[in-house]
Image (tube, rainbow, N blue to C red):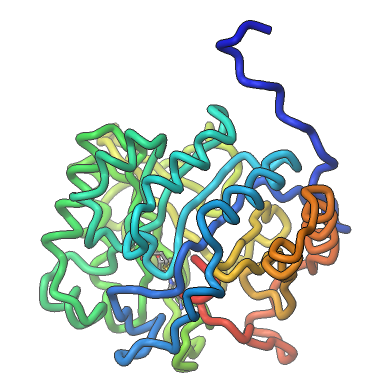
Length: 340
Ligand code: SAM
């Protein structure tokens, strides 16, 4: 080995559940706070925020993530709350990048602070961005997020694309009778910019407990609306992922996709794992149980201990969420507290 080569990574047993699914994608929440108040996520007054001492330090996040990478995780997504409201997130990205050049590192953000931070994030080792944006109409954007910030978000997208943080993805939650009339406009934006727009079905993860099945616009309906204007072709070259991407038959750039968590759950192929800002590991977005890693970490647990706790957490992952079933129970934490 030459000095220039990184030391070989320790290889631990993979994180496999009892149905044979392997956890390889980790969403790391860095804060439960957010500077938007999306109506399907958080009430206008906000939520009781976690006390600072309960939030993992960057060193703690990097240590846990390092053990999970040794256990086979290859994709890291920094999220929140709104990750960019936490100070010095590029520093965390640099620490995560030090875990391996082979890792796919991305961030999910509402985009409000992105234009200012994108260059620093890229230089720290970020590969790409996903920006949440639910409306391209200024007053509706404000109505949906309680923040008059569409211009800043579009600028964040543009700057990210210019810096090569690609593919630039947009997450759009589609709500019945609120923004469903905009799906074709979002597809047009994808064609004009090369962005990939992923339409997300509204899930029962709002803190306000206002979700109803009637508020969901099914993915199939969204695709049908877009197909009425643009002919779509499934892009089968991609690795399987929840959002089957579609390209435009006429060769225009950009893609669209659906994340049909409610109407067509993709639990059978789910490879995701989540670390909350306060150090709980969750094998499913809808899990009712989670594994606290912060307490063991702060009381001297070894990396082997952490790996074992993570393996146990994943091993106990259930077959799938129960949305729409009579026995469905909403998790105690809502989306912004888990990390989307
Ligand atoms: N603040 C960042 C952002 O806006 O992307 C990251 C956290 S946010 C909780 C992650 C994603 O969850 C966003 O795309 C948001 O729209 C989505 N989300 C929040 N509540 C949701 C719900 N009830 N159903 C579906 N998606 C939801």
